Length: 256
Length: 258
Image (cartoon, rainbow over all chains, first blue to last red):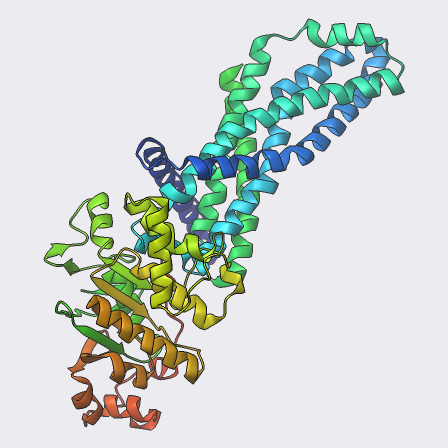
């Protein structure tokens, strides 16, 4: 019994330690955002890495998600002759929920893990120590460009995912299920309003912050050589994905 | 200063002063805390108790930005060079110049070339760190460390794992840097030949303290069993109060991030 309680206690302590460290690094990152020097070139490079390089994976994910959504909705809606509303369901689902969440998860897997691996390698090869010895704040130099890129680029990717998802739904509904293209397009936009798009974009900006900061944190706090880098990379993906799903619930509650 | 990692006290009320322009070499068995001591000097680690003073200024009593200003007085060379592998050799050496000076691109390029010449590696600005041998990486690390013309140089095991010829090249480069810049230097090494060549003073770290602190010739001739064990490389000569874990060497504790 004592052993179990000790294990639970250790787990809880580790959790609080991790959360505390997250907020400490968040504070240092926000301070680094405001104070010079401003790492414009580095931020631009990260925007390319996080954003441009993620376009193919986000495009394919959204395209097939929109398509499968149309297929599944058709099966369900057919039962009460509401096939005409497939377009609305696909668009609303993509804009409000699936676009931001799936993009967040895909970018976490692609860019969050890369951030953890890169910073982890820098930690174990003393490159981060070298930054400090060269009078450079590693949080400002390494975190700020990545987190800024995450916040800027994730909403852009979500716009792409929303559009691609709607396109995927359209292709499946019109080409495969035989829906009328004009009616489908009309239905797609009939029940949409600006808030559907903005709520998704606000969510995705928060997801961008979470996935990049968690990726950086896990890499930065790496210990134990090559094995440690592997562990950090895995943690960055697992914790980043969990954080996105938990934040999604609370943000949806607030934004609705 | 005192520093402990968990229950293991690595530095125990250690007291050490280095005079301006002096070259101090610290010896000690693996895992005894030499790297930990050097990391305290440049502020990579914070002591649990005590202080690190640079020209009378306490490194941890000043705000972060002023601490960075103090750090600019240092040039630190890391064990494996710690070069930024996302940059070329030239960009590595230019890094502190671009960040901390208002030099033009031309002036930066000229200083980079000058530093590379000093470490006997002219014209390799465009190479990537991955293309360099271990000895070259360390020399590029030296070049980056001296780019800002620091007053204090720190060398973390500059020759460990290198062949005798490359070691000799590195010692000559260190000598040349000292002759041209006359910096205060602190070097940690296991290599006695290196130590006796570049040191004005040789210190032996044992049980968290500077146990012996003598000029090179007196150090070499010392009858102290800890020195004898080290100089002759004979563990049987080590005094019995040295823990077995310290005799065989333990991995140095990982640097907890600041």
